[in-house]
Length: 138
Image 1 (cartoon, rainbow, N blue to C red):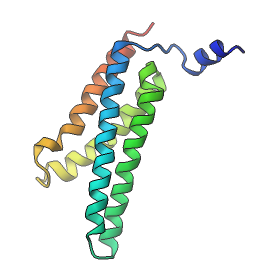
Image 2 (cartoon, rainbow, N blue to C red):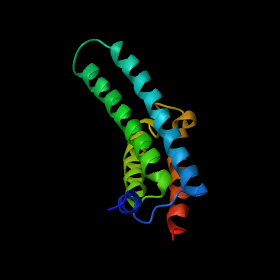
Image 3 (tube, rainbow, N blue to C red):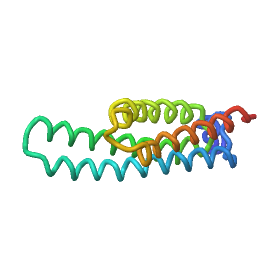
């Protein structure tokens, strides 16, 4: 199999478009926001007394870090190429992360609407742009 054939098999029907790049950019920004959030949550955990609460907040920091890394990697490798796998992975991962934020942090009022909804706005915008890119494929 030639390298061209291998690449097209790996990213079946994929093509870089302005919409796929714009959607991937939103996902990368969402990921960067979550890397920053992971660091701030880590700092908050470090200030707590040793115990279960501190451990759980460190775990939350770890989860935020991994959500952010996942979003960035999938966006740069798959979403930018308008990959079906990338489309569904980031749509699902970001929705899971944002629903938790909205339900457990924003709605109870522990974080103001802004900047609390910055991540969800980026993920919805990324979802809209990658959906349009996906629908315009081929």
